[in-house]
Image (cartoon, rainbow, N blue to C red):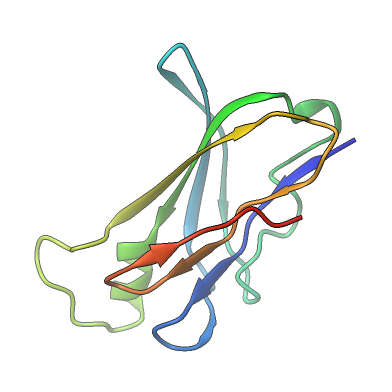
Length: 117
């Protein structure tokens, strides 16, 4: 059975992003349902997969990262309103038997993601 995981990397400081609040939503017919709330550990990861086994279903999901709060806590001087505050990554799971790793690579001014395994 597959699993869903994430990882947050702070490329402005060149380290994993610890303490980032993360929300996972399932999206069906335009409606979002909160599935889980987590925070990244000192390695920038969650302590366990966000979903695994039968809990991971094919469908649409969103990961929402509180990047603005993280950078503010790091002492970064951010403009108001923040350029990036909550970063949302909308993605699909086509085959729930596979692993889906959805990392966030972030600075106060930019972000990227990719599908890892």
